[in-house]
Length: 162
Image (tube, rainbow, N blue to C red):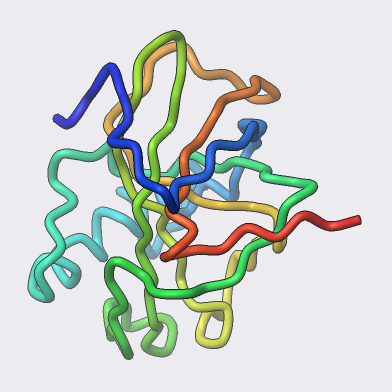
């Protein structure tokens, strides 16, 4: 488990406030979808590991945050996987992953932004101000709570809406 009490400062890292929001429950299996009883992340993890990304140290679900008034633009992801054929129930999808740090109660949690490509995603489409995070288990988070996140602008550029 990668938990740190500080952030590796980078000239391209931007720290913003975000709000913890409910998701669809598909990644964790909370939505009780019969196709993926343990959640989509549990199924997808093996396909990502085959491509060099090990998610075993992270919680098998996503933490959704609202970054408004910001939106994002994909620049250079840490990982990009094309045409991952992970399910017999939906067509293959592309996936992006970006570095992120989440700050909660004086601790920094290092993780990834998990982003199925909107061009290939057929279900559970997210708002343009929502990011899904794959992190170690973070105790004490509740919906509506404000958190700080650090995002590498070289990977995912944030743009403030008017």
